[in-house]
Image 1: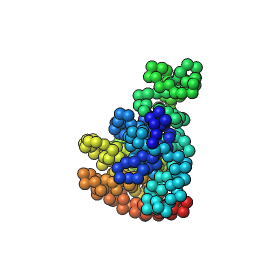
Image 2 (image 1 turned 60 degrees about the vertical axis):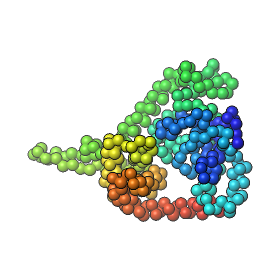
Image 3 (image 1 turned 90 degrees about the vertical axis):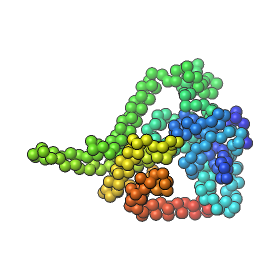
Image 4 (image 1 turned 30 degrees about the vertical axis):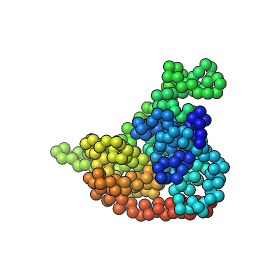
Length: 325
């Protein structure tokens, strides 16, 4: 086990949850957590993000065990004993290949479809894992931005976090991200204003609606947005969805169905591999409380049958490769 004072963001640990075996995870900085995860924060606990698993967990530091290269090595030496747990083996493999917190968080944001929220160019590790979203790195004395002269970070809320040039650069990047979000929302919006091109006939007394295709050059990005919005509306919540959220989800699923047979294929294997949109639809189909979305979800999944089968074959091949390590 480890002491509170020893644990820093970016540290690799083993976290035990319920009946599951201890699982490889990384200590995650709170300011980068999704809002739904952050709302569940508990006193005297740090956030960890599991490898080969999309979930987070709040745990007391003293209950976490450090995951060193020696521990990983010993685990793979016993691979025959652990052969029945391919997901856990894959998690250890990801932990073994872990390079730094910056790359890990960037990949996590991409997987969760929120790269537009990642405004920092470089994410440091080795910070205090108890710091909340409200704390920001700031200048101290004459040290570099975010650093003090003794090499430690200063998180004072009262000090200036960036100079004028940095603020302008950050604002510009934020504006660009907001513009990207607007563009994507335009792509997936179901309103007639955004999804139909209206052609005025010569007599101007009738109009013809033409369905606008999604931009295939941004299919992965848009699929990630589909997943993030639907997941937020229906799955990642503690209360029942509002009527507005239900309506938005119906519109999003309709938009997906309208673009199933585009040429080129919008929902190709790369888009599904990255977004895992098909897995989200399976969760919806298996939830009796979401029965109003079952039929359209089943139709979409049926059209993706061959692609989903290819992804399963990839997974099987990956598991075989892991077992041969």
